[in-house]
View 1 (spheres, rainbow, N blue to C red):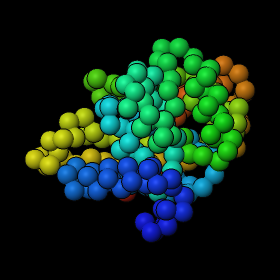
View 2: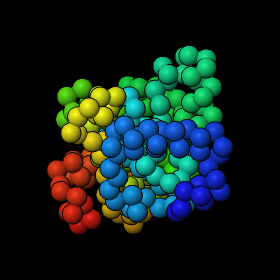
View 3: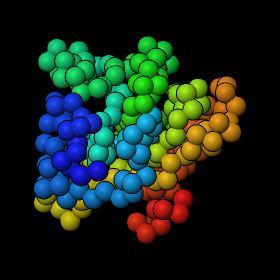
Length: 218
């Protein structure tokens, strides 16, 4: 989708934030995006990634050329002005450490309306950078609504402010979608949700281990 067409699919404030973040990442973080064509430009989809830095949600959002919704920890909404901004750019507050039914219902509504949803199945940032276990919530959403899941891997987002002085660059890789048929092959119960989450996290790990030319053969 050409950049000039973004105005047709994005709200004005969302588009403004998208452009600012995208330009910043390109200029100062040497952003490299791989496999973005794996993300459908329309229709419901879950984009699920590893989580190593607070900036991961907007960074991944700035890589896809469509408006998305995000799950964000509820603590961020305690600041009045930040909370208002987050709400206007499609952030959904979620309580960490528990199965937040309110957040899941809101995310489900977004997906049923054909929106994209960016989430982090681990539920929190990995301080070590090692990818942990996925929570079953991602499996529950995908299986009950039957939507595809695009695995994504983000690299070097921690310490992004200093990337301009380093040889490293910020990388975001998108793998082949886990199709609705694949999602539907799992039972619609807790074990099925856990199995989806396990396989998804394995796909994300593999994205982090493969060379760029191999990314399309997952």
